Length: 165
Image 1 (cartoon, rainbow, N blue to C red):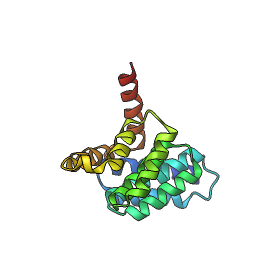
Image 2 (cartoon, rainbow, N blue to C red):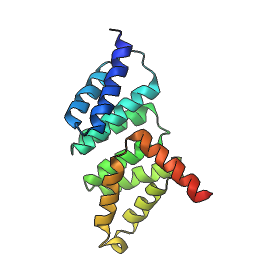
Image 3 (tube, helix red, strand yellow):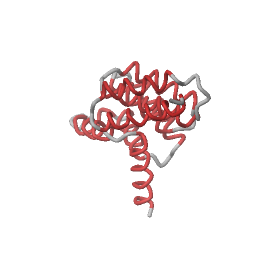
């Protein structure tokens, strides 16, 4: 089978397994896809592979590995606000609030209408006034992580249009 087709097949299978919450199997497929990154693969598709694998690693509580994948994706697409957001989430899970805040602010700089990033920046900068509400914030963030990259992106684009309208 053609290696390009294999790359795409691994990505699509990884998405399916991730949607089914079979994260270890999804991770295996994303690893196989990224192993083929030596091919002249479409940059956007490669960014997607790193982003999806980072999301799966986050679900598996492999936050440092997730940060490495988001960083690689950011190298390839430095103007993608959702990659900075994802990396910020991984830093937040590690309680590295300063690094998280830098990433959330960069996400906002790239997409000023990203309301969730704005809320998290507000939370991190004013943590004391949020005491007692932290459990709600984490619940919302965990819930939103169940969206994959494209669902999250679509959700916020649609939401921001509704708010603006």
